[in-house]
Length: 338
Image (cartoon, rainbow, N blue to C red; front, side, top):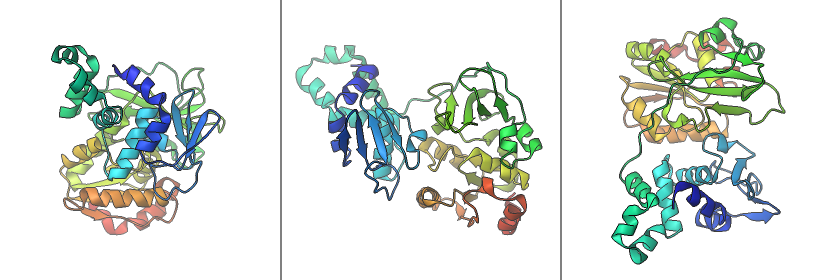
């Protein structure tokens, strides 16, 4: 059984998957509805929908599918991560699937050693049970035109010089990124373009955020890492925010040692990267909402034993919505950290 057939088998048994994940659900037509098992305090019985015909899911409350894949594997990964209180990997998902579908016992009881050695899925499980496969993002080409700086983000209050510095622009060329604001994502050295995040400029163009290329794994990335590194080495401090706009607004306030984590959760891969930095102080600026508060709790669990942690209290929903002078005032006591 390869991954394609495994996914097919999971999609053919959604009730089994939901039951094993401990999710209360109801089926209406071609959709399974349930509270979202990923974010806390989810009591809306239709917060999450899973399309039986397409095998994809969506959290209508907080867009949790944007942090994980929107297929059955992503739903499983997000749920078991939330239940365990720590970010799980794809290898953990495969192990969970193997147990639920009795794949291992099937091999052990009914198949010879030679048959197991010849089965590609057995090789996958054995490999991933030992260690997480390394991910190497390939260099991509910007195969469409876009205009920088972004008029869309300028209209939302960001300085044009800032947007030009971060190479953020608007795409009006027909194609994957049509009518999206373009946010380039680079590797840790800044020498390679490895991904693009497109923010919809029109309400009707969904999803709101779209990663390119397809399958881009944001778990391994910290946005702005390569620009921030010099200033991290100088200050021994790191500012952590959720979104890219937060990083831009911090830059406008004179804070250049900031990264964003592409969401509310610091993944195991991002945590490993942070732990290799020469820092003693983490300043956490996740959003001022329920998800942001949950994020602070999780970050405290992850890092409180290793670093000094500071959680400034925001006066707006997020840093990106604040005025530069308000940010400077908020972080005035932390001047030695930037």
